[in-house]
Image (cartoon, rainbow, N blue to C red; front, top):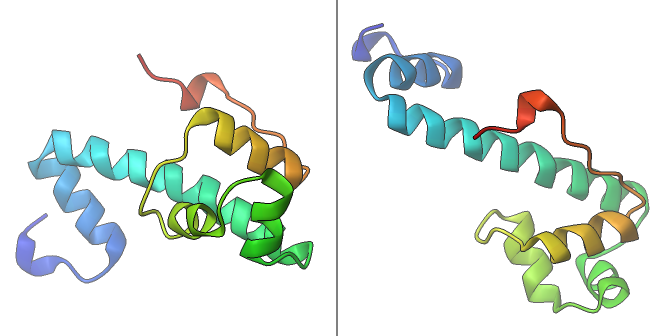
Length: 100
C-alpha cells in the first residue's frame, strides 16, 4: 500500500505492517490494551459506577483509574485484577493472546 492511499485507520495499520514490522507489533499491543480497557469502561458504565466509585471499591486513587482508562498508564497486574474483580469481569488468556 502506498502512503498516499491511506484513508482509514485500517489502511494505516496495513501500511505500517508492510513498512515497519516493529511498529506493527506496537500497534497490535496497543489494540489489545485498548480492547481490555474499553471492556472495563463499558462494564463500569453498565454498573452505573463513576471512576471515583470504582477507585473506592478497589482502594486505589481515582486519578489512577482515570490514567488507566485514558491509556496514559499501563496498570500493574494486581491493579488490573482488583479492577476486573470489582467489575465482576473475568480475564482470560487464550493461546492467541500469549506471545513469547
